[in-house]
Image 1 (tube, rainbow, N blue to C red):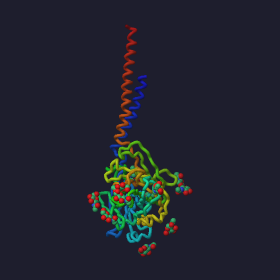
Image 2 (tube, rainbow, N blue to C red; image 1 turned 90 degrees about the vertical axis):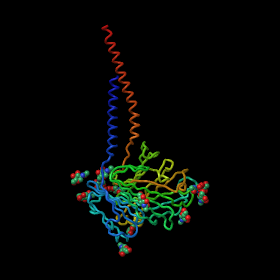
Image 3 (tube, rainbow, N blue to C red; image 1 turned 30 degrees about the horizontal axis):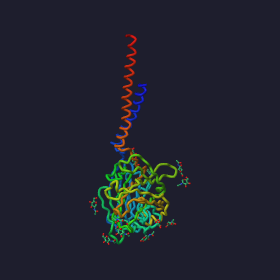
Image 4 (tube, helix red, strand yellow; image 1 turned 135 degrees about the horizontal axis):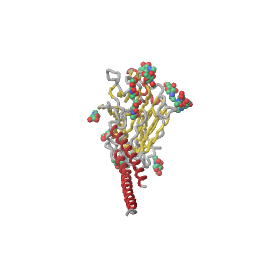
Length: 400
Ligand SMILES: *[C@@H]1O[C@H](CO)[C@@H](O)[C@H](O)[C@H]1NC(C)=O
Ligand SMILES: *[C@@H]1O[C@H](CO)[C@@H](O)[C@H](O)[C@H]1NC(C)=O
Ligand SMILES: *[C@@H]1O[C@H](CO)[C@@H](O)[C@H](O)[C@H]1NC(C)=O
Ligand SMILES: *[C@@H]1O[C@H](CO)[C@@H](O)[C@H](O)[C@H]1NC(C)=O
Ligand SMILES: *[C@@H]1O[C@H](CO)[C@@H](O)[C@H](O)[C@H]1NC(C)=O
Ligand SMILES: *[C@@H]1O[C@H](CO)[C@@H](O)[C@H](O)[C@H]1NC(C)=O
Ligand SMILES: *[C@@H]1O[C@H](CO)[C@@H](O)[C@H](O)[C@H]1NC(C)=O
Ligand SMILES: *[C@@H]1O[C@H](CO)[C@@H](O)[C@H](O)[C@H]1NC(C)=O
Ligand SMILES: *[C@@H]1O[C@H](CO)[C@@H](O)[C@H](O)[C@H]1NC(C)=O
Ligand SMILES: *[C@@H]1O[C@H](CO)[C@@H](O)[C@H](O)[C@H]1NC(C)=O
Ligand SMILES: *[C@@H]1O[C@H](CO)[C@@H](O)[C@H](O)[C@H]1NC(C)=O
Ligand SMILES: *[C@@H]1O[C@H](CO)[C@@H](O)[C@H](O)[C@H]1NC(C)=O
């Protein structure tokens, strides 16, 4: 009996040790060690500063591949990611055609045969509605939408591998909508909530509204996004649940808008986010507000092409899917409470990063599993020796 107990606990210990070892390994290795060398260039392929919005190019060179991140404020803000199977692919821009915005093919990635996949996200509109009954249902009472292609966009504020772009409503200097793009050379996690896990194959985009005057005291906002691709645009949103909220307190879900090839289950590209926005620039738990997304719907590629110079320049036959993200929930404070709202997402190629258990949860699980096992083991050993004592007593008795 005791032998069975110890053999059993031995196996559990073995499994536990392997588990702890694996977790520690992924902790110290950082899970994924794929890294990329980054170079940043504003206005690629140009000696002068063309008029109008800006175009930023971040080249992320991996072992045998390159990711080209292109971020453009000419028209609606757009991020385009092109994945090539060569570490020497380049971006070519015909600036005269690019600025004319009437032909496709004015921005190309050479050699064309090296392109594996491309995906883009366009920030097309900001919607505002008067949630007078505090239901957050967003079915009526809409104010005229803000077309982000009509905003006046500032110069990008570049530092290291991040770029901040702010835009304001034309003829008004009150408040702005800003986007911060961060590109990464290796796996990691930002300091501020929601602390999404990123890899060298993804970039982070944070969007925030700051001081934009609401048109009613009970206004709430909705952001409209368009995902654009060639053959396989992002088409469905999956929601994953998990039990660990250490990195994003109170949030146990992650949503990912993914694209997969027709008959394969491989994810080619993604936009990933946690369904939470924050009402202050330094996020805290009391400033968290839930957000919800609509189902992606196919859009006319022509509309997207007209609103974004980058889409017009790169895609000849874009396929677009639109999705709305609405901020706030019935009963939550309105936008006027802080006049601030921020939301963060990752955009990348390949499969979205998957959060593993945090060290704290591993600790709790180890303690939770470990203490009963230690008790079991101690109990087993105790029983074993008691039994042995008894049997040795019994064995000696007949002699005496
Ligand atoms: C990169 O290419 C070289 C030469 O073709 C090859 O030896 C190496 O295994 C490749 N590395 C990866 C990660 O595919
Ligand atoms: C694009 O616009 C430019 C100037 O605005 C014009 O010269 C050119 O013919 C146009 N091209 C096409 C294909 O419409
Ligand atoms: C990848 O690289 C090879 C060799 O350079 C090339 O022949 C091929 O067309 C490239 N593109 C794709 C999509 O595999
Ligand atoms: C709010 O409630 C009032 C009274 O119940 C109703 O008349 C009005 O249509 C509601 N507004 C919205 C936007 O649902
Ligand atoms: C640009 O960013 C840096 C660091 O984030 C900040 O200190 C600086 O004030 C910013 N400049 C402008 C013009 O916003
Ligand atoms: C902007 O805000 C200032 C005060 O904060 C106000 O005086 C001004 O009228 C506002 N401008 C517009 C266009 O709303
Ligand atoms: C990133 O992409 C490279 C090249 O496609 C791949 O080898 C690597 O596993 C990817 N890393 C992650 C975390 O997806
Ligand atoms: C919004 O709230 C402020 C302060 O409570 C108030 O002065 C103002 O009249 C309100 N505006 C509207 C349109 O209800
Ligand atoms: C926001 O609007 C509500 C509802 O009208 C009002 O009671 C409140 O005072 C406003 N808050 C601010 C900060 O203006
Ligand atoms: C998938 O491929 C089949 C034939 O191979 C085609 O009939 C179908 O329309 C494709 N579906 C999509 C979503 O492209
Ligand atoms: C996927 O579909 C294409 C055509 O739609 C076909 O040629 C290919 O063999 C299919 N691949 C698999 C794995 O079924
Ligand atoms: C998109 O534009 C092309 C060329 O300008 C035109 O042929 C096509 O009919 C348009 N499609 C839609 C859905 O408007």
